[in-house]
Length: 442
Image 1 (cartoon, one colour):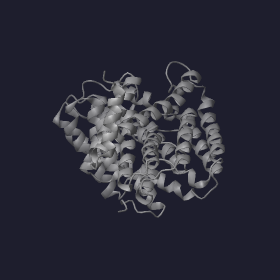
Image 2 (image 1 turned 60 degrees about the horizontal axis):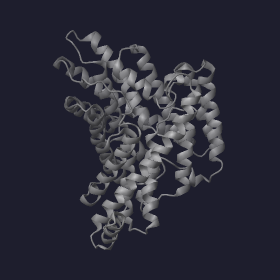
Image 3 (image 1 turned 60 degrees about the vertical axis):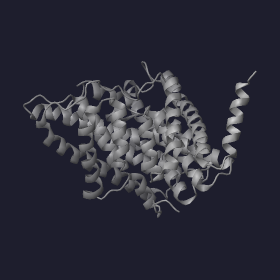
Image 4 (image 1 turned 120 degrees about the vertical axis):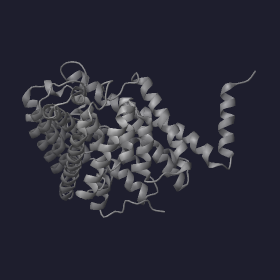
């Protein structure tokens, strides 16, 4: 009688004895996808469960319902706790995030260190729990990339194959975080690997799909945001307004990048001082605008689905989120910035959508239409990843009507940020500040 387990093991052995690299990489991509999804699920649980217990009401993001004084105190305490945690590690192990992954890819053949991943795991959890203006995707990309790299290092893979496994991990991290497997693949190629290759494309696709399936099974296929089902442009009269909107988003992307890079001048200061300063800055802003605390996905969903906010409030929280995130990340707090860019874009888009309603006589598109366009445009401008941003919009909305206006705003915002304001990807700018070249080393 056939033994299924032995048959599977026999197939695995045959694959690894083969001279063809692609089957091996496909199998390893599958393993990386599984590992990354498990790490991301654990990462989410480690901050979602405490927040669901500690915060008032239902869910794990209701910072707004805390007493006003806690809006200031909580991020400050978080800065102290994160500073104490970082003091346990050497300077070289405190470097985290997407820029760190790019550096290890370019200068260390994709070899990421376990200690940096540990700092990212617990540092990211602490930042989110204490209500810092954080994103979970930056830490997720670091953790997924580390999972792929550490697996490859343990198997003594070649440098080229190790790079592919890092790409598999970063794609799987985005897929598991957003439930957007195609955007995960494009992000890995466009931001991490900085190249498109046939050999790398297949295992990265496998890794991304597996991670998305695992995360979907665990979280019931939920998206990060509640997106309206009907999103489309209602009138051609809106096109000039959308063009102006794209330019504004590109300018905001440049402001975010310049603010964050400007804070890098303090990178030589003691880590404890920088973390406390980041906590104080966040707390001071959150005192007036508590919506900026934590991930902010609940606020994004509210903007996408109704008109609860006024134009003035939407503009205020957009600028508040921009400065709180850019300053804290620039000071070295181990947290992500992808979700905050989506928050900023949604708030700006919502404000401009309300403004369009007042200025244009013809019926205009829903506020959620402008908000979702703002999310993609801001992500594209800050990350300089237009294709990843467009694919993310398509997967988040499951609506082909978003493609044409999405292409328009994403491309214009991208060009505005990169050519008019001369701001490269924020991750590339971080590397340049450190005196590093962002191009892959061959």
